[in-house]
Amino acid sequence: MTTSDVRWATAPNPALDARVALAIHPNTPVETLVMLADDPHRDVRVAAAYNPNTPVETLVMLAADAHRDVRVTVARNPETPVETLVLLADDPDFEVREGAAYNPNTPVETLVMLAADSDSAVREEAAYNPNTPAESLTKLATDQIWEIRMVASRRLRS
Image (cartoon, rainbow, N blue to C red; front, side, top):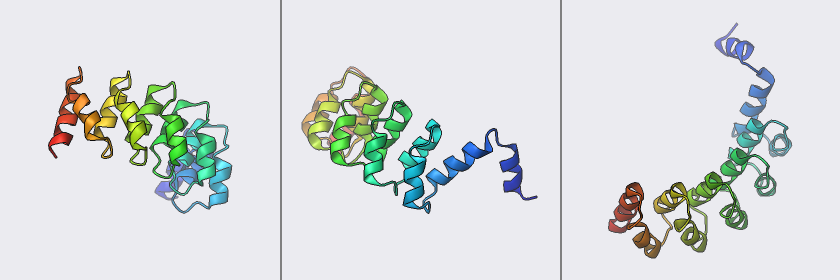
């Protein structure tokens, strides 16, 4: 028995672990990724949303998932279409908006909106985004949260 056999046999849910591993693997066929994106378990859908080879149409579908972790992962995926990032930037959950602020493909107009978000984690991620305009960074450099001020100030100096 190999080490991987032992890991497989002692995994809490080997079938779930196998589906997650398949969904995240870079060589998983597109048809399989599409199927896994519809899995009843959130962890499998998160893994499919993370995979850069998941088709755009599937990422768009996953952006409407009921579970926040799936939407966060779609928001962070660099293959997510701009139109979907704009929608995710308006999500009621701050972690989803934070994911959209992280994505380098989020449009500048949306980053401006996220830089003024009521949640400090979203504003901080917008400050880190290389595409956030100087005008927004200037405002963030006076934010009430010192970490945000620090990031914005550094970005303005670079």
